[in-house]
Length: 260
Image (cartoon, one colour):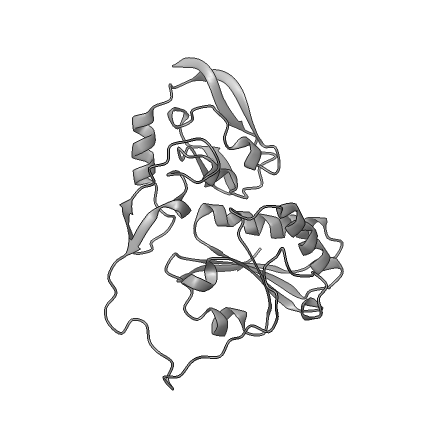
């Protein structure tokens, strides 16, 4: 052990949003029991690439006795870190990125290159009438930067806030989840200006007086940031609105559905 720089996470400030997880290329930070935690000292290089991604300023750099940074341990950690659930996927090639910027990295399960096992014929069933299915989308635009939070279709509506990848993963997204709801889509990892998203969500709750807010996200850690935005908006709004969290696997399977 040696005295060196290493990240420190204030659990009192941490909301478990998960935005720091993909920022750590070494996979040293994970969300455990709803909080961001440093899983091992030897995985942290102490450079602090994750600091700017924490909206609560819960991450700082401290000087303390810690195990030396171990690149071999980092490589092993990146290879072994699961994508978060029991989805039948297998790793094909881990990312070769080992930098410390924000452009993605091997530490983020959402950035891994994976392929699904071959599916038996007939797994994806066509509609009974063999014709095209109807879209349940009832508005435009849908991207959070473009929508007006007080547009007529949000007034008093049940709103679905979906991560960008959800509709591509869930085969019956329109029929099972979008039907009867107003939609907004966003990516908590790649979209800039998320403070704008926060203000719009507050306006939906207070001004549009939405009925419910369903947040539908993928299983990857970076997706939890969208739920964090919704919760923060609900805490800032003067009205109370029920929030439902739906988490789906990389193959579009329902993993959990809970009111939060």
